[in-house]
Amino acid sequence: MTAGPPVHLLRAAAMAAAYAAGIVSTSAVGGPLPPRTAALFNDAAAATSSVTADRLDAPTLVVATGGATAALGWTPTVDAYAAGYRVYRSTSSGGSYAQVGTVTPVAATGGFDAPTVDGTYWYTVRAYSTTWESADSAAVSAAVRMGLTGFRPCTAQAPDTGGDANGFESSAASGCAVDGSVATDLNSGTGTGTSCTGSGKDRHRFQGFGLGVPASPTAILGIAVRVKLGLDLLSGTNKVCGQLSWDAGTTWTTAAESAITATALTTYTLGGAASLWGRTWTGTQLSDANFRVRLIDVSNNNARDFTLDGVEVQVTYTP
Image (cartoon, rainbow, N blue to C red; front, side):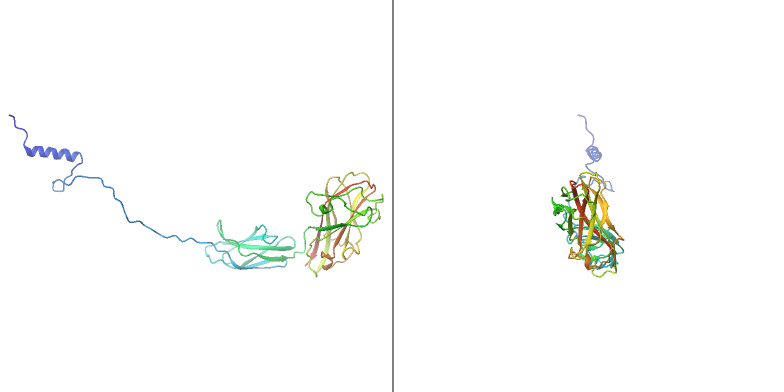
């Protein structure tokens, strides 16, 4: 019987094979260590933190003062990181607001806005930081008097005496606003004369322009009447005449006139920024209670049809 290797050699070989396989390792002194194992460690402790949301606050105590410009004032936002303020304006209370200015730095307490025509304007102010804006501040209003009313349409009308005595007899209310809807004076007048003051000419009066001129301005400088008119045919002599009244239609100015040069709706201006229509005016005479415009359709053919798409008035004055 042949003897096998000594037991201690067999054990050494087995340990070497186990070490190579990564099952055991040796200690610093050459002895075996516990088998290598893979372990999954689970950390049962959850890390928590709280996040505080910040809100960019609007300025407070916003005020507006009217005059030649709108002067705005406010108490600055409490958020020192804001860059400044954006000013928004509307032409009506609760209307659509559009940005009209930016004021910096964040410590600023007010600014100015200068509309180009007279009117009452509403304002809100927002604090901002880059593209981030606060909510609107409370809305405030200011009456601005630049000395130019802008062209204002009429809101009321009525036929006047003369000619057929029915003025723009078809859809007369459409003669106020410039919106594409027209009033029509069919077969205008009862005679073929071409004088603005002829009794055979059709006439129509317009009012309620809401000019808003102060009762006591320094001076009225001029009044412009803008009309948008069309005609069925251009043959012959055709024109539009206008008169103004300062006493609700009892008395009228000398007529201003303009030749009608196209059949399509075309804008004609009577008077102007330096035209006083032959008299001196007060602010009260330009109020809705007193001010009137009279249009007179003139043609040497009383088969002519006049169409009207708007009557507007602009007053230039020194506040």
